[in-house]
Length: 480
Image (tube, rainbow, N blue to C red; front, side):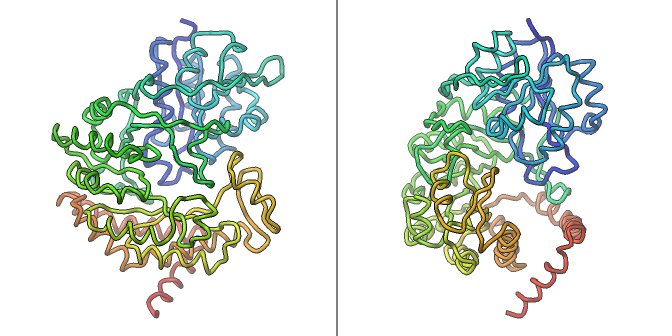
């Protein structure tokens, strides 16, 4: 074998990682590491968010120098990039360095410019590509990579996207840690998390969404695994909360029902969450089976209360359809989390601030509001560039003469604070009781942790000089 010990590294240091970044395992990196197992003597997987000793850069460098033949880094988040660049540039020059992941693919040129130690970037889905790299194939022959040779960066042709049935599920025994629910640095209850990918790709064409495109602009055709293999994987997991990381779990309702039937028949007692489209409301039998199988939460892209924005985003439904669908969904004992986008092209502050009222009206239990981003291959990019007063940064951030980045950030906080009132938090807890998400023991553990969560929240707000705004918003709501 060309290499003896390959390190697969999730390089996000725990000190500046957000709670969301620490929530779930680096599944993409685990897929690639698993595919490499028979190409090297030893595969070592490290997630720096959870490492203690090796999260120290000096100790990690010493470990790599003594034990590792090749380093494969997964860069999937557009965060901590300068920290990552600084660390990678300290790696020994004689140890090959390979980077992959969504952000690495998206920022190939930037990575080569900032990391003088970088040899190869694996672009797109890397399971097949990394095998050829580790087996020592000539770099010029490997589809799907960019590589440095004689001071020049070369970009090989894209690799065709594989059928998901040909990809081996992640080997969880490579992990050194469990993934738990932690809020502001405090563990909540006894929840352990994992993800299962039952399908890749999405057949829909929402204009704002590039998840169905890889960073090369390739449309990821929908590819689904056999339901039996999915449930076999679930049954073997230790975690008690499982997220289906499919872009849309309900693309094929009959297949989704089959997965539920197998979970029920095998009496698998876990709690599940999944991303779905609004049209799941059209499939009552699927919803009934999901409740019976243990699905506790559905994550749904609603995007906007305004029909003209929904048309602009090509969502395929209007606000009336949202109201009608949630009238159906509320009949099922499931927690509904809605995603909304604000800062759309032509949207006013008043329209943005109407999101909380609409979310309450339709009965969404919780929300996430994200600023509109216009990625490299987004169909919205041309519209944004041609609309007077709108600008797109190199990072895909949209802003306008009327609403700067700072202004949009403030609006986002107003939306969040308007929706998440103390009364709303009580309703969220009541909903968790209704869907039987918590056991009695977990309720006790959760309540015992809340004072520490709130303490850490206040400390964070004070450090960021936002605590006064938070207190002011509480008083404003109390006097409404």
